Image (tube, rainbow over the protein chains, first blue to last red):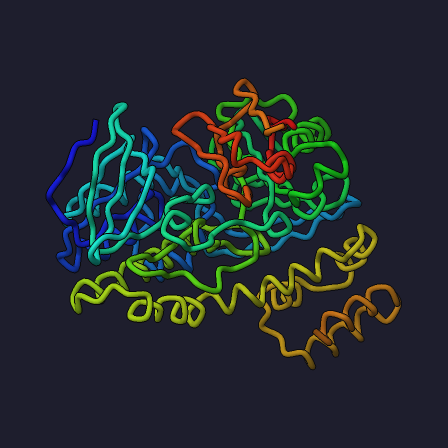
Amino acid sequence: MMIGNETVYDAIIVGAGPAGLSAALELAKGKANVLVLDRKQEIGCPKRCAEGLSNRYFTIMKIKPKKEWAVQEIKGAVLYGPNGKQVKMKQKNVMGYVLERKMFEKDLAIESVKKGAKILLKHQVVAAVRENGIVKLDVEVNNQIKQFKAKIILACDGIDSLVARMMGLNTKNNLNDTDSGYQYEMTGISGYDENCLHLFFGTEVAPRGYTWIFPKRDGTANVGIGIGAYVSAQTKLTAKDYLDRWIETQPGLKDGSIIEVNAGGIPVGGFLEKMTADNLLVAGDAGHMVDPIHGGGIGIAMEGGRLSGTFALKAIKSNKFTDDSISGYTKEWFNIRGNLLKKRLKSRHLLEQLTDDDFNYLAESITMDEALNIGNGTLSKTQMAILFTKKLIKRPGLVKIMMKYLSE
Amino acid sequence: MAVKNNANKCMYCGACVGVCPVSAIVLKDTRIVIDEKKCISCGACVKICPVGAMNL
């Protein structure tokens, strides 16, 4: 049974995550008539995420941490090399927080509704067609198909995004640029500085990736892993297998209790060169807006979501929804964030070529500042060359990898 | 043969949907639905699945 609905929304956002809700807030603030649809039954849940958010994004998004959801202050990180060597970088100031996303995203939802947005859950978009300049969405709800209409669609529907694909924009993820992620929220764990994020590297631990402990106060933490998607095919071990195996080796973890299980794919590269089509903008995981090195995406999704909201608003005000008139969104995204992420993708490709011995050597010879600069892609090629010549002269293998990286 | 989803293992995270080159997989709230006619048995979803819930 098809139920019609004569309202034509200015914008329909598909996906009530950090990207979609940030877009909704921006559109609602601009007085647009905006509807948010989500297939799930609860906002912020199940999380597919380690819940870390750095201060940078609190500033960029102009939000203040609330004690209800900014549950753990983070002042630094501890990196663990394959041989167990630790590099700790901790400062006096708070660098960011580990969130309770369930609460955080509900807060974002409440804010956007206060400004005038409307949200509907358990609404799954099953088809999208353009007709006379507007988009008609068929939405499955309660075993019925309801039709919704809008001038523009914002696809913020995560890694499993199909809405953009329905509208002719290819958002598929290449297997080589996708990580397989698995995580437990554990409690009753001990022995880890709760003010630091803990990252563990090594091919035994997590091939092309790392395992993490993101503390959430009171002996509770997100304990997870991200590995290259191709790894399982080679080793016959899934992300879950790797994580379970590793937890057994950690005295502070193995006796803890699991209070939540999470899984997810992480788009860690392969940026979308095109994030618009007629009547369509894409943001968040659906638009591959994730840091290629650490796989974090909450802040990036919020920044991208807000930007997509800005461009949707412009389109609504000028009543122009063609790809040509909204394609400035892709360009602007690469200006403010995408190009930086691309540089970091290059750094990741470099890191992927390092062996465990290389990692151990680097952990012992490179300072934290130097490592940060390399990771952020802030050094020029000459600076990189000088740094690496100085550090790596004793390891010809590393020099070879470096030369290849610099000549690309 | 199309890929099969093991609902007992599945975490309905949607990673398989994201890497399916032919859009044969849909995540519907808490279950994975596979269009057997579209599936080309390429195994991308088997490789990405964090818990080994996809089988060819």
